[in-house]
Image 1 (cartoon, rainbow, N blue to C red):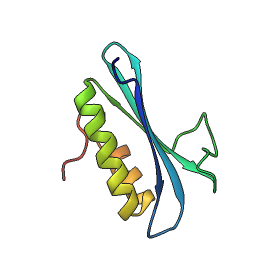
Image 2 (cartoon, rainbow, N blue to C red):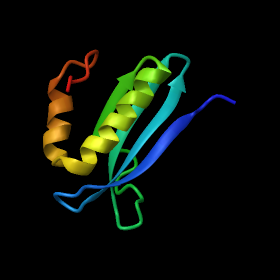
Image 3 (cartoon, one colour):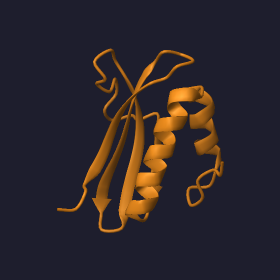
Image 4 (cartoon, one colour):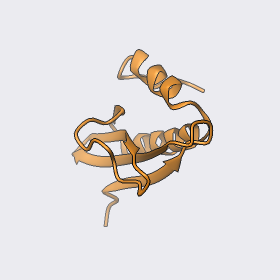
Length: 96
């Protein structure tokens, strides 16, 4: 059975805030990775308003982006990470 999505609970070390990183398979060639701010129980505070949404075209690209965002969100300030992805064109995620 093909993978349909990924879900990770993340506690940001610098701010001690909690986040949920979710990647879902929306369409045949469309994957969406979203970051939600979460409460103590890792439930998203605003289900309809993610902090960040990034679209990918292939499963490998989506899984790599999901892993990268999860690791970076653990160690970096969330506002800086979100601003970085919002300022880049949608077709090209930022390079390390």
